[in-house]
Length: 420
Image (cartoon, rainbow, N blue to C red):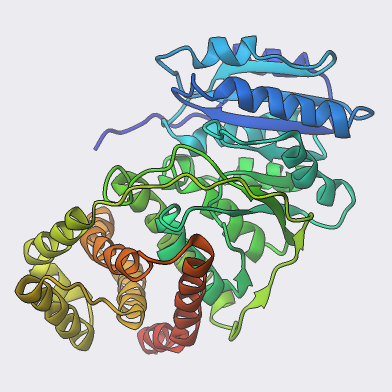
C-alpha cells in the first residue's frame, strides 16, 4: 500500500493566496472534482445562479477543489457561465488523493474566509438547480440547523451502499433517520467546517469516500442540529452495483466501523430512532434513469467469495450466522435461487462491526472480505424489487432499516460481553 506524505494543509500556497484574495464571505460553495468535464460547467453555473438569485445581498464565492483532473475539468470550471459578482477559484488540492482531501481544502478555505455557511455539492450532478443552493443554505442562515443532509428520490438500484449498510446502521446506532447520510450534497455552519478541518483523519479512508459518512456521524454525535433538504430527484453518474463500487465500499464501511468504536458510549445508550425534519416542498419529480444490474455477476461474486474466504468467515461470523450463510450459498449453487434474508445480513454486519474493534491484524483485509457477502445481499434485494417501482422498493429499504434497529441488542450484547 502506498504511503502518503502528511501535510499540515490541503491548500497549496498559491491556492491559499488566491482564496485569501476573495476576502471574507458569508457563503462558500465547494465543489470537489476529478475528471468531470462533462458535468462541471452545469454544476458551477447552477451554484452561481443560486447564490445570485437567493443570496444577492450576501458575500459569496465558489471553490472548485480539483484532484488533478487529466481531462478539461478545470478549464471548463473556469469557463462556466456565472452571474456578475460571483467569485470563483479553481485549484488543485494536495495530500492523499480522494474526495475527503478535496473537502478538506474546502473546510480550510471556509475557515480562512470566516464563512458562516459552507456548502458542498458533487461535480457529476446532471440535474442540480439553483434551488438546491437555497435549500442547503437557508436552514443554517436562519439558525434552524447546523448541518443539512440531502433528501432525494433515486432509482431503486442506485445508492446500494447507502441502502444496505449506511442508512440502516446510521438509524440503528445513532437514532437518526437520515435517508442519505452519504448523499454528497451538504450544508453546514462555519463552526462545523472548522471542526472538520482540525480533525486528524487525512491519512485514513476519511480522506477518500469515507468523508460523507464521517461528516454526518460526527455532526450527530458532536451535538449539532440536523435537518434534511428535499432536493427532489438525483440524476448523476450512477453505477451498476455489481461493478466499480468495491473501493468505495471498503472506504465507507471502514469509516463506519471506525466511528462505531469512537462513539460506542453514545450509541450504546440509544434504544430507538427518531425522524429528522425534512425542509422544502417536494419538487416536481424528474423521470428516473434506469440502472442496469448484472444479477449473475452479483451471484457469482457471492459464491466464489464465500468459498475463497471461508476460513476467515468461520473466525469472524458467529457459528449460527455462518451456518445460515453457508446454507444460502449451497442452496444458490444447487437451485440457482438466491435467498438472503435481511435478518441474517444485519447480524453479519454486526458481527463484522464488533470484530473490527478487536481485530489486531489487517483491518483492511477484514473489511474487504465483507464485499462478496454484500454482493449476495444486494443480489437478493434486486431480485426482490425487480418488478417494483422505486417508490415501492423504498418500502423494502425502510423495512430493512427497521430490522437493523430491531436487532441492535444483538450488537450491544457483544460489546457488553467484551467489556466485562
